[in-house]
Length: 298
Ligand code: HMG
Ligand code: MG
Image: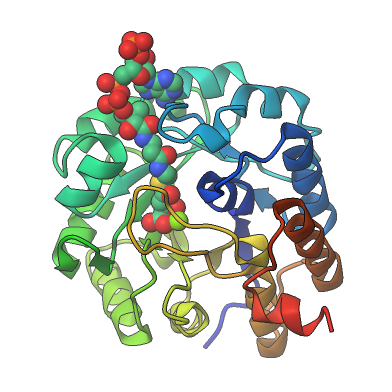
């Protein structure tokens, strides 16, 4: 059976723009955020408070949030790796943060300059302080299926990392297929392992990159398991600068098309979203990889 309603967690302004070769002007980012909210998205991941040398594309996080016209009923979560990031996010008035853990040693080193075990020492005080301040805290787990340096990632290893984030106080987990290698059977296996480990399906989100064209099939597998939060990026923007072979996220338009066909509610206006992605394509000077955006652009 399928859920009646799904929350689309829009990551285009963060996961999408963090990987752009050029730095997008803050005015364009603000218009992008406005247009996404106008299209009916209620969760729009706005930016990251990471080290500006690591991700220069998001170095304008303070200015962006200071100028952001926050809409009623729209959440604007941001990524924070450490206490310095949390301090910056709190000063900017955020209500929702996300830490981002790795399921593998190799990616923890490359993405966080840390380690599989050591990363928790960085996250635990962040999660505790954020919860004390009344914030929701999402915990991403990256490389849940495959890792470019380590190959197939054991399910047990992923569940252990996820459980540690929940035990530390995260209010939701987002299971990331950072390099897009998962297939539907692997998604079912991982979700089953979390459920068997006592994690509620309502606390799990899925985050698929579409490198191998599997993101929609993987999403359907997750929906059938009862997942009700799905990450996607408008126009299929995205990728991780610290993960080899990571391309764009599942396109929000492709997800909306699937959900419409399934009769699952989501609240997004597809035409307004496609128009937004076409506008963004012009800003970036390249066409959207989303099949639905292309099909509707005739
Ligand atoms: P580090 O160099 O080890 O940091 O980086 P440090 O703690 O040693 O500090 C060094 C200097 O950086 C210090 O300054 C700190 O104050 C400063 P100094 O005293 O030398 O003048 N610093 C900061 N400045 C601003 N904001 C901060 C911050 N932290 C330290 N937050 C660090 C460690 C974690 C900061 C670095 O590795 C980093 O920023 N990594 C972020 C990488 C990233 O953003 N990756 C993309 C997001 S993850 C992703 O895309 C996957 C996802 O989509 C899910 C999926 O697809 O799987 C979420
Ligand atoms: Mg990602």
